[in-house]
Image: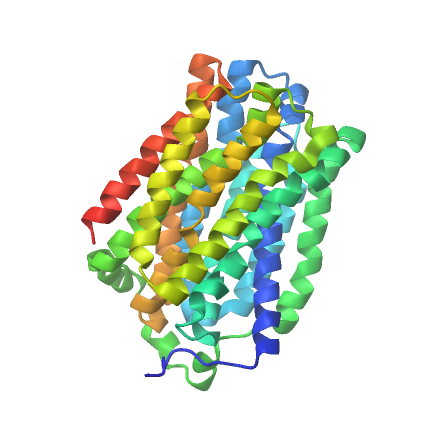
Length: 406
């Protein structure tokens, strides 16, 4: 039976929409990772000790996730109410302004933190917008792969960040790398304004938006929904592990292997190729073979095991560390697109923006535990190699919670 919430359009329209969503996520993740890539230089400018870099650096990288979660939960219902175009324009504009201000006020830690708060508030609606648009333009049989394409913008953005930023940081200073990311964002606002449209089923009727006036009632229904509970528990674990690993990779490689990212920035991007491959494999298997829940549980189990291997194996040289990190991301990123596919297939269309925002908000608010916990372990032990072990515990806890809610 045809999915009444979606319309299959000619491929050229789908590719245009997916391309813009992909670029939106790519630039957003470059903005998120900017502090991680430049952390060594920021720490030198602010005269941090190793312990301060572990704690203050972890807070600087992780603080983004709290306002990001708030924005997901409380701003995303406006997508169901007003449509995605202008909200995404405002989101990308705010994101670009925040990255610019972070560089401009980078010598003041408090103002730098506030710029990361603005970044989180600005980016919170991006994934809910993408989920809403894809649910409207793509059929159920193709949503998994469509989700993976826009979500690949995340690992691609993370991958190219050290490649683009590294040489700029070491030749011109870290601020100019931030200004470049802000410029990319400002330029992207133009095609977003011109081409992103409401989903076609909403264009024919305003009923969906009129139904969604009561945010609290929608949230109450979602919290009682067992499918939503399961999706949120699993995604929270996957997301926390991802951010805990991602934000510390540049510093981890520099301190444990002596890798000079200024001369070898491309090496730090290799682990994220595992994310791209994992998302493509997971979404393809889900669309073609089914067993979405099994893929998610396999992802949580194997990523937790790979982190343990990375932590306790005698890693000699940068290439071995990079290979193990590649496997961590390959296994861990089999799952993320599948959570969005499960939402699109189980939540009614007029509440999809709210549901995605609530799930993503909870996951990313809790996600601050990832980088901060790694930073605390580093500060306590003085060893970067021990910091990641906390993330394997989170992965296994997520596996147990997800399985029990089946």
